[in-house]
Image 1: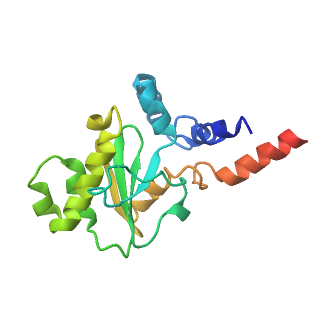
Image 2: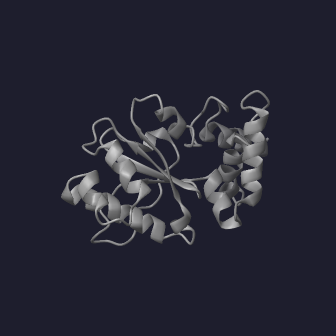
Image 3: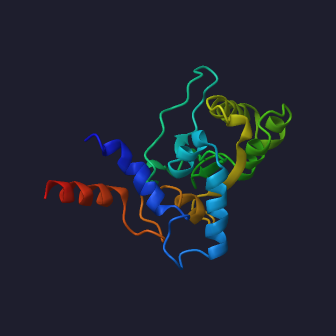
Length: 192
């Protein structure tokens, strides 16, 4: 059990583009990834491998963010909006039944401090909820001001695959084993 806390980060490292097998990505892409990892501050390295998946909630009355969700597509809901923070970027996934506009969320991600962005990006209260949430998210991290806007995808669109690939507990094209299967196989091997 003491090793349990190391399993997910270890599994995430195995699935990362930096460690994928030859042919899964180009040599240039892997070298760029290694250069980025080499220069990433240590406090952001853990988030790079195991990003935080957070549901959009109203934080104006409660300054704390919700607990991170498991990094699996089962955590996503058709009517929700979810943010993924990976130490460098904040990306968003917008469910197909969500009333929020993906483009509006993208504008808020790009400039969360601008007072006028709420008026342009969405109507009134909804824009304030998203902007307050993003300010709270950035405010919880020592590097929060450095986070860039990442992908904003709507469920069902082709670009969704890029977001889902960051959900390290699910099988992905580069690594077909799920985290649950990986943990099970290690526990079985340890028991044998």
